[in-house]
Amino acid sequence: MKAAVLYRSKTGFTKKYAEWIAEDLSVDAHDLDDVRNLSELLQGIDTLVFGGGLYAIGINGLKKLLADESMRDIRNVFIFCTGLSIDSDEVQREIYENNIKGIDRLNIKLYYYRGGFDFKKLNRLDQLLMRMLKLKIVLKKKRKALASDELGMLAVFNRQVDFTDQKLIRKLVQDVQSC
Image (cartoon, rainbow, N blue to C red; front, side, top):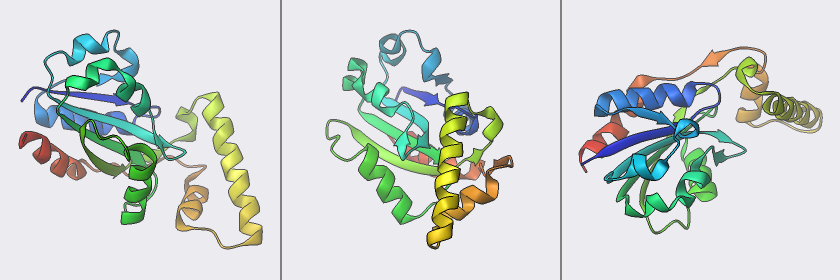
């Protein structure tokens, strides 16, 4: 097995998981945005681990990666994503439906890890979008009860929170090593 770890991270939580995974697999972690020649990096790779944060339930960077021609030779793809939600069957189903469903040409396994939130690390556009989301949640709160994810977002909006946990990667690492 020859593996590679790629990620796209806006605030560092996905990067943290990618580096832990790469360390356990004895490979390097590569930021997708820093890779100049993806085909060259993936040449000879049969197993790829990719991580991206969740933004509007889409895995950051996944569409770009899957659209690349060099992905056609990868036999095993392990995708992890990070977000604020507490892991549940519902969260996993929603991520799968919005990101993986219908991609039959690859053997893909999906993992979800809780990341964190740091408003100050977001770029200006993402800060604006998060402010709009917060306003939408606050206005909804006046009309009806909020979901646990919405309550969680309001609770952490003005704080730095880090829910990363290195123990969470064990299953993914074992799955990759068994290829």
